[in-house]
Image (cartoon, rainbow, N blue to C red; front, side, top):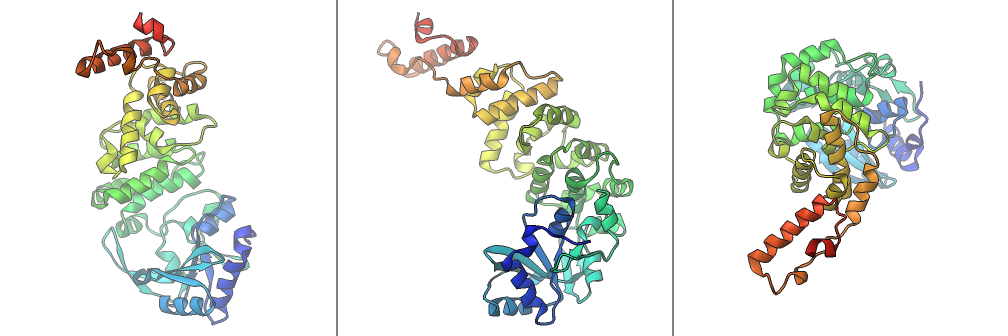
Length: 380
């Protein structure tokens, strides 16, 4: 089997491969770029594996005229900018010691050792510069069947890095065959070792959960997380049951992880997942609006258009009913609306706190009219 995608034939990419191979070293594409290419999924990152040591990779790349960035020398990784595109080049490795969060590695000259330290069989695939696929662990059938399995013993892989529990559900959501369900052995191992999630940083948990919730349909994976007791570790009090209806209601709309997070409920994820200030603000607005009774137009006025749309979809999913007819047009109407009364209309009769209170009161009356009351209606 061969990969024939455009990315693999780019001049800079091929020149980097030649620079390594002409000095007697292997240059193999590995991981996500190979997996995605074989599945017909867009490739965003290019990773290479080699038997050359990091310092050797740097020397070879510099002599070939490429820019080199030492992004992870201690772990064997050098980023080489070739043809304007970053390529992460990593020396074959084997784990010497792991503690569930990080690994001490030793460099290796064997592709088999490098493959055995990877997380899932579909990620342990390599390809030569000409696209010829190399499958040292027999993971190709798993990939073609969209069957996500841990490399070797599942519990051993998880103990090496507990983040692999969350990656298991994330990769299943993105690449697994929903008709075949989730791998039973992997699920059992994740459940048995779920306490290890508590050792992970909030940043790592948040990053994985963002990616999971951004999948085309994260519903089955999140439901499996809940059944295995994993969801309670990453978002205490969450309830997954509204997620599947939300995905159905989204139809052709682009997936938004924050919208999906809003229907899970539970504790505020701002600190648990280290949300940014903007993400935390939008999540609070979305969560509150999805639990209120405001009309689509009022939500469109009060929130950004996309947040108003998210709130309406989230509310519909949680109550188990479709959004109101014409809701998208109403959101747009609200987003374009302008409150028809200003401070000048009430001054000088009112000033200070009394002025602010009256404006708020009139705004509430305007909301009650579904933004249809005119200035004359409100001022009498």
